[in-house]
Image 1 (cartoon, rainbow, N blue to C red):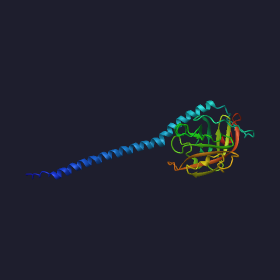
Image 2 (cartoon, rainbow, N blue to C red; image 1 turned 60 degrees about the horizontal axis):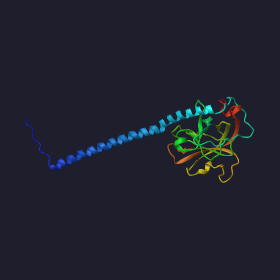
Image 3 (cartoon, helix red, strand yellow; image 1 turned 45 degrees about the vertical axis):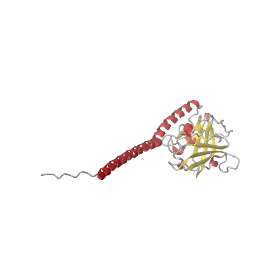
Image 4 (cartoon, one colour; image 1 turned 90 degrees about the horizontal axis):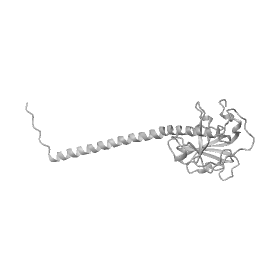
Length: 253
């Protein structure tokens, strides 16, 4: 059986085929670049949402161990609240870890506690050390507003469960001087520009502070920096460090 010879393609047809081949190659390259970009974005998200937690948790555990070596002994017994003059320490140097925040509401089989360090710089404090103390705000136990900041997502996410806090919940601050027990009074969502939430008297920013208060601040909602979630509290009691620990940290509390 004989075959019929195919006619040679015209020059126009040859140019069309060359253009089609070049176009396919370009589409192929773009497709590969998009796939690579997708992989890189996926790796970045995994790093941001998972690996930064791993790194921060490890480092903050080391920081907490070092703090244990520096803080005076505190007997593991329940002590009655003191009625004496409340001890107040001077503000430490920037990025210095000086205490811990204990939140019984956030216990998960193990007591929840995170180190507190001076300052709110992201690179040196919030991303690395955990909870930061707003420079210039009150120290624990002091009349005024002891204001704290922390991540809600990534880098250890110390304030991840902030929306679960309820009015009356204890927020216990541990320092070299004492244990300070604050009680949650309210929570609210504000714009990042609303800085009066960390004023000395957050209930009335134009008025002078008359009591010791605490404020927790973090980003809101999750995976966004559009707003800030705020929790306020006031000092309820305190326990001298050498006397023991507050009843709020007892397993039976």
